[in-house]
Amino acid sequence: MAVDFASIPLVDFYDAFSPDTKPRFLSALRSALVDVGFFYLRNPPIDTKIRDALVKTTGAFFDLPTSKKLELDVTQSRHFRGYGCAGSEKTATLSDQRETLTVGIEAPVRGSDSPIYYGLEGPNQWLPEETVPGLRKAVEVYIQETQKLAETFLFLVAEALELNPDAFTKVLNREYPFSLLRIGAYPQMDPSNPAAADIQGVGAHKDSSFLTYLLQGTGHSSLEVQNKSGTWISAPPIPNTLVVNIGRSLEALTQGVCVATTHRVNLKPAQYLGPDNISLGKRLSFAFFQTVALDVTKEDMRVDIPPHILALRVNNVKSDAETFFTDIFEGPAGEAVLTNCITSYPELGKRWYPELLAKVLEEQHRSKMLDDAGLVAEAQAA
Image 1 (cartoon, rainbow, N blue to C red):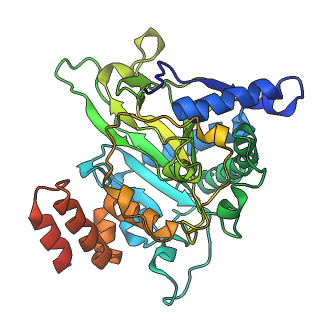
Image 2 (cartoon, rainbow, N blue to C red):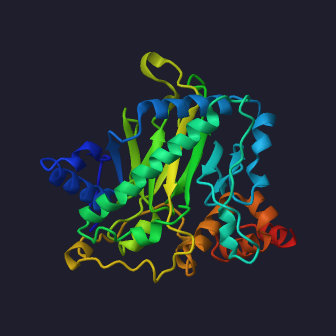
């Protein structure tokens, strides 16, 4: 029987560094990892000025004319870095109504003799500094600081689960960590319009990451998390917190003790009103995906887990997220990540990875995720 939750727990980062409070921290973290899959991390070690600069400069970027933003069109980059307009990204074959700017930790471009998934590594795209002053610095500093937090948290997760301290380092620590920051700008809605309907900001899904660190940059209460019986629970912004959630990689590493939890961004007109009914404008969010190294294999992901921790696994969890890809991730992790990317950005996949896209669409069609075989034929002809 699934253990349910009705709210998202809060874990205070400061508690991890005092002998008096660390037992409380580890207990709260273990419960969040095993029972919920989501938690608020209060007092994250990222200066508020860094967070504020990120929100300010990226807000200015998304206020630019579309033609200017499209100078960073993500389809220009085989590395999936750049700008995506609303509707260009898909979740479970449906279009997400948000603009995105994706930036990662840069790495040298590998030669053509390297496995195809190394195409995920490479440079970012940037506009000239004078177009949005301070944007590049704000984003790069935030990524640097969040990466430090993520690397510290590896050891805290291991400790909370009573694993060896370095249980996860072998699959995450590399010269060029594969971490991405996806900045989302969700369209402004008119809450006074009685005909305004809910729209899919991001459809129901589970992240493929190890852990995801989300900064909710504005006051919109649009993030929703699905509990184990299938009910959607709101995860509204809380000041001075990040929302942290488990991805499929951590689920695999812990043999299902930590379960990736389904979530979505469901845009409702009422969520665009703040205190005193003042419009909140566009919703801005910043999802930092800490991902296992691209060359990690199933064999690498074997972690020695104590029997009493394995006994914490919960079965019978209801999820609205797609399950199609669960059985096809048999090779290195990079293959799974690349597959997710090209299904999220099919136009990019058609341009840079047409053979792989055709294969994935064919499999989706066979599993009845797609009803239109014409999409498959179109990809095969690309």
